[in-house]
Image (cartoon, rainbow, N blue to C red; front, side, top):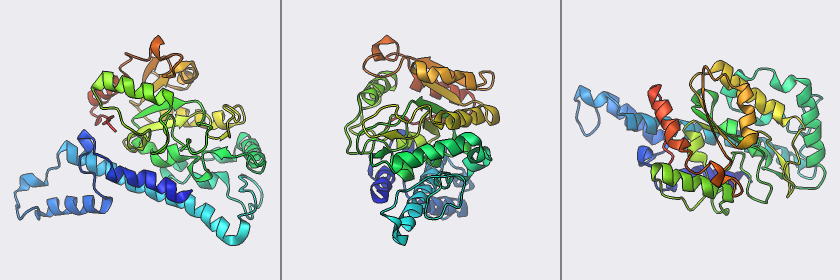
Length: 331
């Protein structure tokens, strides 16, 4: 599981680069080029003007830093599970629990490894509802029915988009419930997996709004790495049973995430598609943040207000007015 997920991040190095993210290099090469420019080693030109970074260079460097951090976080989660298996517990259920001795188990809280979120959500895993959520997940994982996404990707949205980098939030309902689809990011599927109908419509609106070409894949990690938090309200689901993990405690956790963004940040763009997502507006201080609403991009409702919403261009306009670099939506 870990290797396939690692490839999804590595694919970002291989894919055609977006306009603002041309020639995305590895974090180390980016740092080396940055150091060289500051030391005047760029082609031997020591003109002080060359020490000034362009907006494109800054965006590329921030992207590379986010990518490196996301890869590290993914490896930390994967290693926790691999270590458990290496200790001879591969035949046991991977049980998530918040209290107790935890011997032989991976604690749910240990799979959220991004420090900025741990600092922003102090004590969340110690609250009573989290204990009940954990017991439910334990029962589900030990029940013999596959649970999605894979354990190391349950908190992928938070582990990929750090708290300090959040510019926009796109809220989904629960993970895709088919094999190989869910990757812990709302609306996103790994490369090689058929693009779901809702995402097909998202791409159509993106083309109409910004003229972006329609990708052949459904991996939205590049958005997440730029600061678009792709957050599902429910973070796990049972095989082929949509909403099977709803009302078990996940909503309380993700509501806390949204509240924390609202209370501790300013100028975030909340993109709410459909009635379910729009109900979350109660958690957002609209005097501090921006809220964009439309119909859901599903086939049943896309023609009722999603197409033509222009949320991608509107998001960038709002960010630019605040002096925040816009999102390169082209994948």
